[in-house]
Image (tube, rainbow, N blue to C red):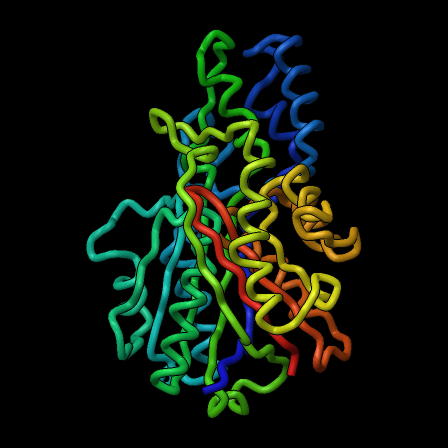
Length: 352
């Protein structure tokens, strides 16, 4: 059975200028002029201009959710209600939720179960919750949703999010061993959510408008710890950019391209996870994938604009492609996610 993505939805909390955040959270009167300058210099080297955040910056270093509507339960309800109004609540039979970091503290019943009860979904399968699959978790959710649609002939919802600011570590002591270790991850990661509506062919007319057909999804796992938690702090090792891109290209991207007789140049839309500028650059290397600057342009621009959203990151790029008003019939794209673990996945799609 043919399966399609027929709608997307993204959620952004309040967006802050990074330079403003540094002066707000690390003011000169608390850390001194030298440290404040160091932080501004570091932020410019990371290259992220703005950060969408869900925590109340006025209460830093305390980490508290700023608004009730930023809670993941409310994000999920907003996405499900949007899709239910489009395809019909009775036609949605599966929900997959994925994330790494969350402000949700009420774990039982799990978030997926809470969403089913709050929205009145009648699912054919138990709702799925996939925490801690790194920045690839949304691809794993997408695979589950596609498999469900093929078997049951009904629609599925993917809700993937991350609230990375929940584990921000603010200290004014430069002698703290985690002071410098955690700064890079703080400047890189942001908060946000994405929703994907997956439908079988028999429901495509109900959703109307644009759609892409999912042709293939490939998942892979290779053990590694260049992305990890250490004593509750988020750490990125320097070798990450050299280790992960070759594995992703070799294990999930190239096998899919080969199966369909495609080269990287045949895929116009690359919804790549924006792990960082150095990681995106690696996909330009001919020995890794040989993409062009134009092919990574959207991923690059969104990373520069908002930072790394973690789980929903690649779907933010896909949402940008999905909502471009232009003729695309027959064009192909690929959604690629990868992260801690290392879990990774790639989804090839074609515009219809």
